[in-house]
Length: 414
Ligand SMILES: Cc1cc2nc3c(=O)[nH]c(=O)nc-3n(C[C@H](O)[C@H](O)[C@H](O)COP(=O)(O)OP(=O)(O)OC[C@H]3O[C@@H](n4cnc5c(N)ncnc54)[C@H](O)[C@@H]3O)c2cc1C
Image (cartoon, rainbow, N blue to C red; front, side, top):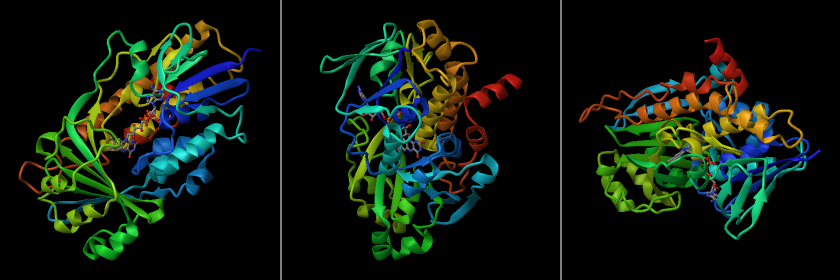
């Protein structure tokens, strides 16, 4: 029996979870990652209940997540720019959605996923993870992936989890990720330092409390929470480009640096007990946020896009990584039981025909992309302090999810 050969471009959250979900007997899975994977950025990432349920229950990684020093988020606390707590929204996620909202250091989560993809102790053959392997193109119909060094790798199924490189093999014209008009600073501060040096901040917001705290103005906001079981405190500071004192057109990515003086100028209206803490972050990342209108298609021939490659979205609901994990679960579910190389016809049917992967995922993810844009709208009226934002506005739709096949059944029944 010929093995089912699966090549995944990109070893981020989407690529590694696809490898986990697709592991099975007689399957050869190769993950091609351009970087050396030893420098995942210092930032926190949240997994929403829809994704934590998949990782814990469907993939059996509950203990491993626990070992990655997860924190269970117990709710949102919202403050205005006078520093007044104006709303507390408890998150009864386990009761309502069957799983928790979990906070991680990105590196810890990435390590758990990498280990599960390549571990010899899980079902099927371990995936082979090749670092320093940059994909430059593919032949989606013939099933060939081309690497920068000239190597060509044959595949029955190609998964594009690499951001932008393979997109052009699916679409007639390549979409441009559009600046959204927002940028985000990312900071992470050791909690001990906050406790030693910033007692006023800690008296108002205990940085070890498992809550997401937000301080919101009309269109700037700080989203803050603990990670590594209280060892670090992460901050995402969202700001409209036109009110930012940095150059929004400079090349921004996870690794680009922000300027503390300029950030302080932008957040001058925020209480000093919070702006004082910014200087304690060893790194200050600045990222111009871009998102995509829903693509017209995610697949062609043997190739399917997943994760940010298929549906980059704003981080305002923390659903980007969670939607990548849902994509991977869908791949696992719809290829379940396939133990030899599928014919071209069988493979493309699974990717695109009604009741299969693309049809199941597309409408849901496109709506969550739209919700993420809506959640970026101003949090107060201009010049006013009354906070209108509701961070839990779309939670029911986003988080009541029990896997792709169940979702498909529910959609057909409605
Ligand atoms: C400010 C901010 C905060 C966020 N917070 C959250 C959050 O709390 N929760 C959440 O769910 N989401 C969050 N997100 C979104 C989330 O980070 C992404 O949606 C998620 O990382 C997407 O995973 P991915 O694997 O598709 O892409 P990536 O994580 O970008 O991984 C792509 C991988 O492909 C590799 N690659 C790229 N090109 C090639 C190539 N040519 N060949 C080989 N390899 C290649 C890259 O090196 C990388 O490792 C946030 C985003 C932002 C901007």
